[in-house]
Image 1 (cartoon, helix red, strand yellow):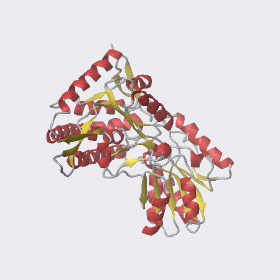
Image 2: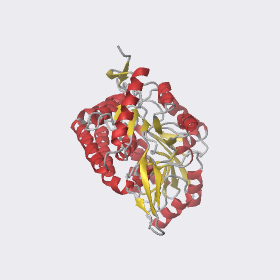
Image 3: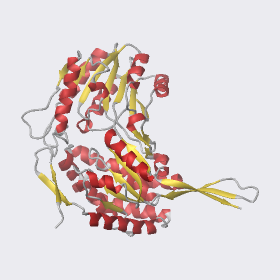
Image 4: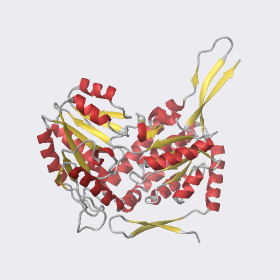
Length: 457
């Protein structure tokens, strides 16, 4: 009998499911089946690929009620947010279906001198997608659907916290007209790393920590295969003196606390112009106090538990470091007692020095740390004072101010008057320690192919 991996709810600790772990022989069988599928799939016309992928999405939709419930049970986000994730997953997948033809189209150069020249976009083979638990559908869909449409097949290693979602992908896309387009690899972290060494793996997409991403990058470099890395963030928001505070406060607080703050592109640093600072703080405190913590399956719950119990001590240490440097904790700042599960109180910390750990290291929790600034230049300098560069948001009525910040900020996405949002038509990418490569948009398709030059006389 294969060993079983049990999945426990972060809310009450009960076992909510289990998956059979893959033996070495089982991994080999799955990779062999993926290779065989690739031999057929790469030669399948794009129109047929689109049709077959859409059939997989229909299977996904048919099971969406259980898939959303499984997300909540596995990682603790409120069921309403899990249902929203299913909806966004389908929207993002259908965007890729519509965009595939244009993104993958052969580029024909002008003929002359008896030469025919064109550029084709050739699939890579078996793509290893090592996905994270915080958005169990949205993290992998950024890779899976474009990869399949481009002619690749996918070995999906989902997080050990959310393996039921990996199984859902395999059920939806593993038994279509061309079988074995996706295999769910239920292996340990060490075994997943060893998968990178396998000659059948042609590309690695990884979402996770900077430390783990560097290890993946080094391992893939030994084989000279490409890697896409979506790593950490410490995303800043600047509330300018002319900001619409109704929009800014609501957006920033939601950006910091949605999914209990467990988002790589969540707002983790807030810089507020001195003229609007007092009002921003008062309004933020009111919104943060309104969150309702509890059973994530309950409709009344607006914030669920953290997925990892060890996060509680790390968040408390960050808050205490800020307090020791002169910051004031106006709300929260510690774990919530009296509830099952790993709940951290929605937290507002003000007057946080920019060199505090809370402003420099990723938190991944529902904390709004605020630093007052005197002008745009000071805000820009503080926003760039980081090792990360995923997204940044500027809350202002002035488009020219937003444009100035976009030119000065070193980040993958610059927002004006919104945050914590992914547009599939735009590349999802980061600067510095936030990652390498792009998913989504035309660039996401191209990153999952290689160019082939045709040069005929």
